[in-house]
Each structure stands twice: as structure tokens, then as C-alpha cells.
Length: 359
Image (cartoon, rainbow, N blue to C red):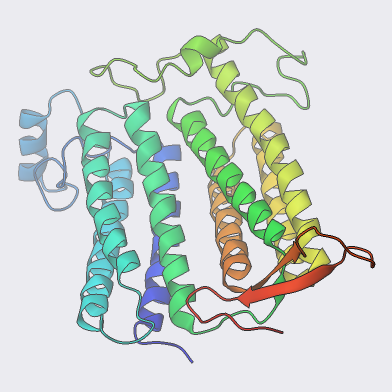
């Protein structure tokens, strides 16, 4: 049975997904500086449109003329993010109010609230530091983290627990898959913030070579100077090529690990979850290849961000099932003098948060 706050958490999760996609759309339409100040836009609560407002914007921001389309892209993203922040605040308040109720998550909603405050700071720095790649990537990761944590909270409030007995190795595979996907999302953010998505425009090679000239030192130089406007990127071609190549290699590594995880899921009877993982993986690979082949069309690029979010949420779901299922631990009878062959006996079956019991 669902616990109090489940529907609110589910709605917040859906809104978080929309915010992530709005952020991707803002970034891909080069609207990250559509409003040069924060939290307003040229000093107003919305994009200036009257003659007086436009004159005010021109006077106070002479180097950034008003572009209404880009301004609205940025402000709609901010409005949605602000609404999400209010919902998460409400979730945290509800969790605190019901903290004495059995099974009510408390630490997770409070941690989510802290993440939201950090995201607000990163959103401000994204503008004030003029799209500094480190901040843009951190802001993207914060958005994906908010989405994932809200989804986990929704699962915990759903009241549904798996009833399978799984080997501990599945937890290891699930953790490895989650870490790999998070790393690949971070690489994708670095690709986007440094405008390296079209650094290689051919497949499966890059610039017609399997290993073209690439400057990894500058491509992953994490202390780029603060001050320049990073709209469009500041790196040269070889540095962007290095970033793009690393993202491709990361995709191959993630694919291998997730295929192994899908096999493990199938082996323990989680066939639907294995199928969902394979579908999400195949979709994301197809969208990534399409980005290169069609030279980053906007709908495909936004869909690639959505695919990354879907793959990450799938890994959250897999880990939730792996870590809340019954875990059978098998151990050997201690060595000693015996007249019969050594054999295994069943150990305790434990479920996190409950008393152990024997089969």
C-alpha cells in the first residue's frame, strides 16, 4: 500500500524530468545566457517586451541585447525549476511532520532539499560565470541527481517490495552499472558544456581515422579560467575531439557492463527488468549514433538527454530491486575431520530493515 506523499513524489519526479529536458533544450539552443542576470531577466521577473523595459535592458546590459526567444527558453526553465523546488520543500516538510511514522523516509527528502539549494547556486553560477564548463556540467549532474533521488523516494513511498531471492553478486553488478552510467552522464555533460558533440562527424571513425589527433590534456583541463564567455566553447578542435572520443569509449564500456547486468537479471528471474534495461540501452545508443550521423539535430539531441535520464532511472530501479530483495548468503561448513564430502548449507536470508529468518 502506498504511503503518504507517494503521489506528490511521483508528480515531483515527472516535473523533474521536464526540468531536465528544459535545461537540455536551453543549452542546445544556446540560450544559457538568454538572461544575463539571475534570478530575473534584465532586472525583470520575465523577459522584457515593452519599450520602457527594452530601454532599461539596453542601458544596464549594453553587451547583451535582448533576444526574446532565448530569454523565454531560459525563464521557462527557471520557472519550472522554481516550482520543483517548492514541491521538494513540501516533500521535506511532510517527511519531517510524519517522521515518527513507521517506514516514513526522512533523510532522503532532507537530502533532496539540500540538493535543491545546491542546484539553485549552480543555476546562478551558470549565468554569472558565463557558462563556465565546470559549473554547467555540475548543474547538469545536479539535475540528474535530483531526478534520480525523487524517483528513489517515489519507489520507497510506493510500498511495493520485491519478493525474489537474489544472489549478492547481482548487487555488485547493479552498483557497477549505476556508477558507469553516472560517469557517462558526466562525460555527456562535459561534451555538451564544451560544445564537442560534433567534434567527430563520421561513424565509426573520427575525421576518417580510428584514432585521430586529440588533445586530452586540454580537453580535460578542469581549471579553465573564469572570466571568458564560454558560449560556443573556448577549446580548439583537438581538445574537443578528445572529449568526444572519450564519450564514445565510455559508451562502449557502459554497454558491456549493462549487457552483463541484463544477463544477471535474467538469470535470477527478473526478465522484465532485464528487457527494460536492454530497451533503454538500445534506445540511447541509437540516439547517440543519430546525433553524430545527422549532425546534432535539436529533437534528437534533446531525446538523447531524455534517453540518458531513462537509462539512469532504469539503473535506479534495478538497484532498488537488487537491494530490497531477499539476499541468500551461502557459506561453507568449517573445515575439520569428516567422513563425508564438504557441502554448503544455507545461511540467513535477510531483508534490509527487517529481522533475519531461515528458509
